[in-house]
Amino acid sequence: MTATAPPRTVLGQPHWFRVLFVVDVWERFSFYGMLAILYLYLVAPVAEGGLGLRAGAAATGFGTYLALNFLAALPGGWVADRVLGRRRAVLVGGAVIACGHGVLALPVGGATAVGLGLVIVGTGLVKPSIAAMIGEHHRSRERREAAMSVFYMSVQISALIAPLVTGLLADRVGWHAAFGAAALGMAVGVVLYARGMHRLGDIGAPPSPRVAFTRQHVVLAVASAAAVVLLVAAGFAAPVLLAVVGVVVLVLPFVCLRRLRRHSGVDPAALRALAVLMTAAALFWGLFAQGGALLSLFAKESTDRSVLGHVVPAGWFQSLPPLFLLVGAPVAAWLWLRLGGRANPAGKASAGLLLAGAGFLVMASASLAASDGPVTPWWLVAVYLLLACGELAIGPIVLSAAAGTAPPGYEGRFVGLSWLFVATGVVVAAQLARLVEVVPGTVYFLGFGVLAVLAGVLLALVRGRPRG
Image (cartoon, rainbow, N blue to C red; front, side, top):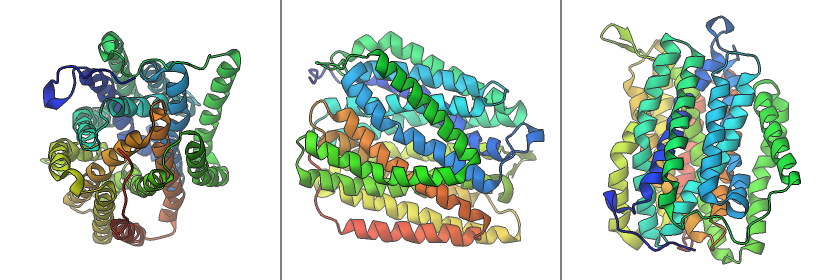
């Protein structure tokens, strides 16, 4: 049941919005803080405290980790909808994420796979639950899109600061100290969220009727967590196994979409329109995910990072996207309300793909220029600006469409489905990232840029929009 709207506060959002804001700020701090250094940690020599992986294997492992984060949102959405309720799912998921980062902070063998596995499980509970609770309150498409954009803006504060903190710690103290900072940030978020949960009212309340959590569910949860850990480890050591996983992930979204069409009672036309949007999001996030891997490597090896006699840590470049999102989100929120029904979700998603494609075309030029030596950091600034603008166009819009298309009681699963499509794009891109070992960087970035531009043009011709 949707709660009666309380008096609106800052930025036109209800009073309980700040409760979700607090936990997501710290979740994003831990996520982006680790994301800024994870790939660099994977490729760093063992003598420097890293894992010493080859660039292609590290890119595949990094992409697998991201894909599993998104993939976990589907079962996490089911648990939130049917077992815990979204409000409690955020609390449990946040605690598991904090434990995962804590394990990563331990300089012992096997900690990387176990820690990343716990982060994945926790993220699967948190991500769909928060977006679904916002969608639960805002049933108007225009206001829901505006609220998602404001939420994007809010959490970028921590996403901006986190890479600066962890990048500096990794560069000056050590990798595990940086992982420890991410753990501390998430722990703070869990405590503050637990103290403010009562302000949510009926938003995200436990389902009625709810599925009883039996001993079999506990065994299944533990087995699933163990499987996630093994898949993460496989991402670093068994690319053939990951190819099989990639095929499964490629098919799974459409299987789940078919099941939801049968059981949710949603208009098939609305589901088809939503599937088109989610496919576009899969392509966009497949491109965006490479920012934390290949673009970070480019920043480290091919960019002149000297500023006033000091070398800027390569991880600091990961603060550029949240900086641009922080500045651009209020503009996007105002624009969506201003345009109203004149700009449909397909048109906005098309703009996102075109901007991402333009970013990769710029990256192809930067790679070509770097063949003569380190290049100016302004190349990466331009690329991250275009990717951030693309995220503003497509990110909150697809989440809003998923929440708006879902009937009551299915919000978590529909949002989880949208992240499952994202997982497909990321895991495919992770496999293709191995091409950097045999294909010149200029050709690699050019190919992805052209693909995104063509997809954006095609999507611009699509008509229809999801319900809501």
